[in-house]
Length: 207
Image (cartoon, rainbow, N blue to C red):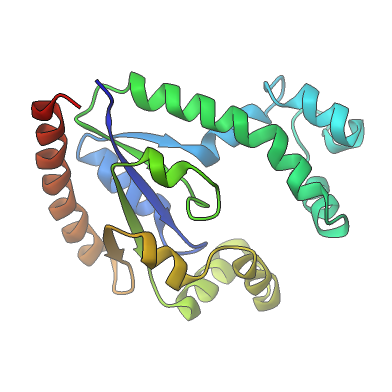
C-alpha cells in the first residue's frame, strides 16, 4: 500500500519549517528534501564524488562537505552550473525521499519540498499539497532579519522561485502565516484531522 503523502511547500521566509514542526508534533513523519540535500553533500555524502567530478575539488571545503558559498558563486557566475548541480542532486533526492516516504509508519507523511512547484514530478507524487503563504513583503522582512541579507539579495532568491500565485495555484490547502504562531497552530491542527481522515479513506479503498 502506498503512503498518504502531503506535499508541503512555500516561498523562502514563509514559515515552512515552523509548519512542518507542528505537523511532526501531531505525529506525522517528515521527509525533508532540504535535509536530504544536506545529507548528500555532507562529508562523505553520497553526492560528493559526482559533484567534485563535475565541478572540481574546490567546491569541497576542508571537511569534505560541499562549500555552499563557493557553489552559490559558481551558480551565479555560470548559467549552466545550476542545471549541472541539479542533474547530480535531484535524482538522488527523489530516490531517497520516495524510499523514506514508503518506509514511514505514520498515517500520513509530510514531504517538504521548497521547490515543489519548480521541481518536476513532486506534485504527482503527492496525494495533497499544502502551501504556506504570506505576503511577499513579509517574506523579505523575515529573511533579512533571519539571514542578515540585504533586500536585493532576498528579492533575487525570490525571483528564482515560483511566484506566490503559481504556488497557490497548485495548493489543495493553504496555511496562512501572517499573524503570529497561534493562528498557524490552529490551522495545522485542523489540517491534521483532515489528513487523518483522508489517509484512512485511502487505506479503506486499498490504494
